[in-house]
Image (cartoon, rainbow, N blue to C red):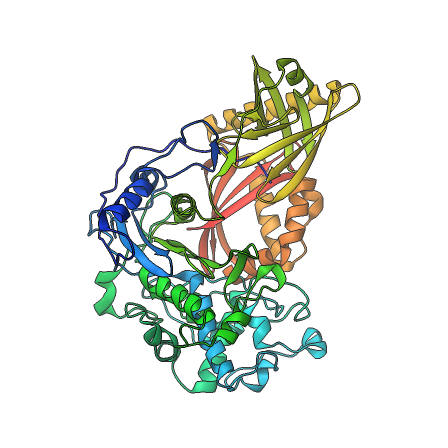
Amino acid sequence: MSILTSTRPLPALTACSLILGTLAAQTPSAVEQRIQRIQDGLLPTVIVKGEPPSATKLADRMAALHVPGVSIAVIHDGKIEWARGFGVAAIGGPPVTAGTLFQAASISKPVTAMAVLRLVQEGKLSLDADVNQYLKTWKVPANSFTEKTKVTIRELLTHTAGLTVHGFPGYASGAPLPTLVQILNGEKPANSAPIRVDTEPGTNWRYSGGGYVVLQQLLQDVTGQPFPKLMHDTVLAPIGMTKSTYEQPLPAARMSEVATPYRQEGQPVPGGPHVYPEMAPAGLWTTPSDLARYAIEVQNSLAGASNRVLSAAMVRQMLTPGLNHQGLGPGTGGSAEHPYFTHGGANEGYRCNLVAYNNGDGVVIMTNGDNGGQLASEIQRSVAHEYNWPDFQPAERTITSVDPKTLDRYPGAYQAPFGLFTITREGDQLFAQLGGQNKLPIFPEGERKFFAKVVDAEITFDVDPQGKATQLTLHQNGTDQTAKRLDDQAAKQAVDEAAARAEAAARRFKEQKPAPGSEAQLRRVIEGLRTGQPDYSQMVPQFADITRRQLSDLKSTVVQLGAVQSVTFKGVGPGGADIYEVKFENGLVEFRIGLTPDGKIAGIGFRPL
């Protein structure tokens, strides 16, 4: 967990198209004013009481994040109040409208879940029966984990079945497509690992797109229908999701409706949208308005005002939180007075989010850029503020006046598992700096509690009887991390080492030469992840701990990529990490690896290319 710096938005580069959707309840001028306030004033994560917020324009954030287009639908009082497109469907192409198609990615899952629950409601399926009694074309392979406990539909819906494969990269346009059985077994031309039970079903929560592929096969086996037709007839048509389809690939006649997907740096995904034969977890093509209709149907069914797909009793089951607040399809959250359901989505070049209260408001945001998740969070925060939601709004802080003498208690170096925290004072202002990140000013909420403005993070200091700080606790993203204060000698050594690393990183960035041994360490860690036996002695303790906790998902990702074919050095990043392009049998991935002066792995990041 760490404090993250914000970036200054760049000048707007994308055109903005405004297409007015359905309006209800208010006069057009009142709704237009709301839209304009959101469009002109995306809010920061923190608002300081008594200070005007440092809002930014939507167009500026889209340009800064390389997101060409975004489409939004807002639910207010149980109706779509407005739906509108911003930016362009493709750079140099047509504007995004309320009817532009996006890939819903993992938001496909809660919509799929509605079809599953419909069959449960009709008595054709049981939530707690062994799924193998319904599967005909393929069976969940038996092993020591399934001998004790069988996999059930409830567990597949709630990511508690112990199944592998987190998600799917999709297939480039024109690439050979595997059958569903080939995907389930991890057989060529499938580009993902076999979907298998590797922990006891029902014992823990672990996100598994693989589980929804099993549901896709189960639904086809039980109904005898192709999955897109089943979903159209059971869910999409009854709800009125007329623009939506699970067809993969999308019929050529509809490609003109599509927003082109873009990567992090702003380049289009080669060949256009990826194809996802894993339809149940990732294959829905839709619009924010159609997903809003799904959300409204859930709200109305829960209230007993509609039963076009599910009864009130079944929706209550769907929205009952289990492990990790997971319902039967959607995630859940909020308070007892204001519960909500939600899901996000991330396919190649698409990011989207849906959240709706069980009764009342909601928003669906869809983007055609890999950085669209950050943009969606900013839009959701501003919508929540505009409509005065009980959740998702910017944190509100109050700056308190403190005796400047008390600030002398806190400067120093603090060692945490996630890195070295340095607190400094300049005049009457304290600054916090984590590792090589930028210094952030922090402001007093009380004598021992401070906050940052650019991120939602708070720091609380513990002091000894003499009033000197002994440790700090970082409160961020719902978790607390403690950092012990170092004595003067240890602090000087730690700061000097950090400065030396920063200087070395700057020098290496200027020279653009890889650190000695970085390629060998990268190859070693990839192979260790593939076998499930990484060499933790070659990692700093913090990175080793993270790797241990994420090993199952990391192993699954590396296995599905296949054998390493080549490793090519591409340069050195500003922070000193070496950048490598690794060609695998089933994909191209960029890795960034940072080493300590003694050659151990300080951290690794990767992303598909």
